[in-house]
Amino acid sequence: MKMLTIYKRELKSYFLSPLAYVLVGFLLLISGYFFATFVLSTQYALMSPVFGNTVFVFMFISPILTMRLISEEMKNDTDQLLMTSPLRITDMVLGKYFAALTVYTLSLVISLIYPLYLKIYSTPDFGPILTGYIGTFLMGAAFIAIGIFASSLTENQLIAGVIGFSILLFFWIVSWLGDVFQGIAKNIVDNISLLQRFTNFQNGVLSLNDIVFYLSVIIFFVFVTIMVVDKRRWS
Amino acid sequence: MMIEVNNVTKVYGSRKAVDNISFSVDSGEIVGFLGPNGAGKSSTMKMITGFMPPTSGTIKIAGYDIIEDSIKAKKHIGYLPEVPPLYLDMTVEAYLAFVCELKEVPNDKKKATVDKVIGEVGLADVRKRIIKNLSKGYKQRVGLAQAIVGDPDVLVLDEPTVGLDPKQIKEIRDIIKELGKKHTIILSTHILPEVSMICDRVIIINKGKIVAIDSTENLTDTIGKSKRYFLKVIGSVEKISTTLIGINGIKNFKSKANSKENCIDVDVETDVDHDLRKEIFFSFANQSLPIIEFRPVNYSLEEVFLQLTTDEEVNDNENADNIQKGA
Image (cartoon, rainbow over all chains, first blue to last red; front, side, top):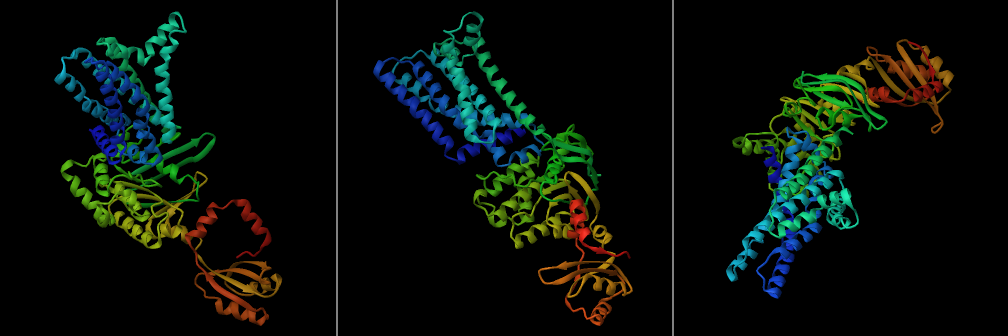
C-alpha cells in the first residue's frame, strides 16, 4: 500500500504546480487542432491522424512530465526520507510511474469528446478508434517509462529531460534505418521501432504481439529504473 | 542494544570515509557524534539509517540487520539528514500526514499523530503554511517533526542545530532533550557545548576512525584532574622557570615568548586541591617579574576534542618551542 502513498503525493504534486494543467492543456490543444482541421477539411469520420499527431506531440512533452520524478527527490534530499522509511524501491518507482501515467491518461479521457462528436454528427467505425486509443495509451505509457528511467540517472532535471527525449527520438527514428539495413539488422530495427508498431493500432489492427512489445518496453524501463535507484546507494 | 555497529567501513572510490568503526548504543541513551567536517559523521549516519549500505561490516537496529532486514529495521528509525528532506510544495500538515503514511501510522491515528508532533516541536503557528515559505528555523523543525512521526525507537539527527540562530538553537536543544526521555538518540554536531549539554555519551571521530568513546564527564575529567592558569609575565623564560620550580604544588608548566606583547606566555598546571594563586603572585613579585595577565583556564570538551583530533606533527612542533618540566 506504500505505492499508493507515493502515488497520491506525486499526483497531488503535479496538480499543485501548473505543470499538469499546462501539459494536459497543450496536448489537448494540439490534438484538438489536428482533429478539427482533419475532420473539417476531409469530411472523413476518422481519428487515425489525430492519434499519430497526439503521440508525436507527446514525444516532446513527456520528458517534461517525467524529468522531475526521481531527479527532484535526489536534488531536494527527499530521497533520504523515502529510502530510510520502511518502503520498497519498487513501490516508490511504481507509485511515481503511475502518477505520471494518470496525468497522461487524463488527457486521453478528456479527448474522448472527439469520438463523441463524430458519433453525434456521423457514423464512425469505432474499431480503429478503439485500437487507436489503446495504441496511444500504450505508446504514452512506454514514453513515460523511458522518461522515469532518464530521471533516475541524474539529479539535474534538465539533463534528465534531454536524456529522456534523446532515447525517445532514437526509438522513433530507428525505423528510418530499416531501409538502410538488410537481413537480420533490418529485422531488429523494425522490431524495436515504437513507430512501426503504432501504425498497426492506427489502422485498427490489434495484435497480441504489439501489445506484448509495448508492455515489455514499459516493464524493462521501469525495472531498470528500480535497479538504477538501488544501485546508486551502493556506489 | 538498540544500535549495534560492527566493523563498518565505507569506501568512496579510493577514499576511506569510514574506517572500521564499531560501537553500540543502549536504548534510552543520547549519544553525541563529534568530529571535524569530513570526519565521516554523516556517512556513518547514512549507513545507520540504511540510506546507503556499508562497504563492509554490519549494522543492527533493534536487532534487525539494516541491509538484510531493512524494512523491519527501518520501522524503528527516525532520521533527520543534514538537509531536512522536505517537499517544498506541500503544507506542513499535508507533509506530516504523508510521512505518517510512509511510517505506517494507522489511518485512524494519523490525525492525532500529526497534531502530536506539531505540538512537540512547536509548529502550531505554521501548520497550514506551505513549507517553501517557511524560515530556515521552521524548516529544521519540520525536519525534526518528520523524524519523530510514529515514535521510532531510534532517532538519528545529523547536525540538528546547524544554521539556526541562537534562540532557535536553544529551542531545538530543549526539544531534543525532551525527546531523549523516550527515544534512543544519536546526534552529530561539531558544536562542542551542545554535546556536553545534551548527551550522555560522546563518540569522537576523526578521519573515519573513532578516537574516543566515553561519557561526557569522563572525557572532560581525564585532563581535568588539575587546575590550570594562564599568565603573561614580563621577564626571561629562564627566570620564570626557576621561579616556578621554587613553588610547591606546581605539576607542570610551559612558557613561550610572546613577541607581540614583548612578554612571556606561561601555562601553569597545579594540584586540584591547592589554590596556589597567592604563592605564584608573590614569588613573581619577589623576583620583580610583573604579571600583566593572570586568569584560570577552564577545561572543556573543546580541548579534549582538539587533543584527540589534532595532528601529532603539529603537537611536536609546539613542544619543541616549549620548556617543559616534569611533575
